[in-house]
Amino acid sequence: MFKLSDASTIIDTALVEGRTRGLAPLAVAVLDAGGHLVAYKREDGAGIVRFDIAFGKAWGSLGMGFGSRELTERAGKNPTFVMVLSAVSGGRMVPSPGGVLIANGQGHIIGAVGISGDLGDNDELCAVAGIEKAGFRPIAKLAD
Figure 1 (cartoon, rainbow, N blue to C red):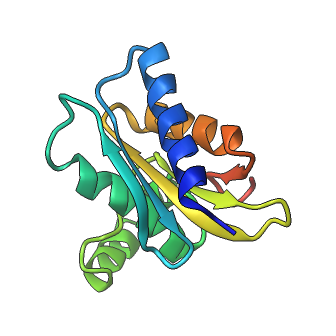
Figure 2: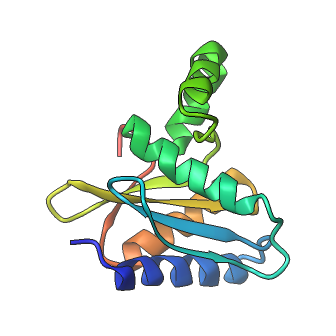
């Protein structure tokens, strides 16, 4: 079972990782497997649209069944596909690294993390750090 305490560990660890790396202020959203927000934090100085981006990275990962890095790569190869996804999802999918699926010990997807604030690669590193600290397995790409 995915608990609020797990989401809190993920968020707090991701934020510490961001500070350790000297990244721009981050916003972190953790969703359950049904796409519902479990927890969210936005650092001082993070822009007001960061929630929507972080949520969209996590929600899009859940919706497609793979991390937003994979969605980013697919956008480069087939931008029409991502444009259609954006339309059918009401604009909720964000094709930028930083959305990472959370798998439990049995490999089942139990949620997703979305982070926005710095470069997508850095957002993703912070998400992975949080997921691993909480004792779960991060899935950023189909090959993970």
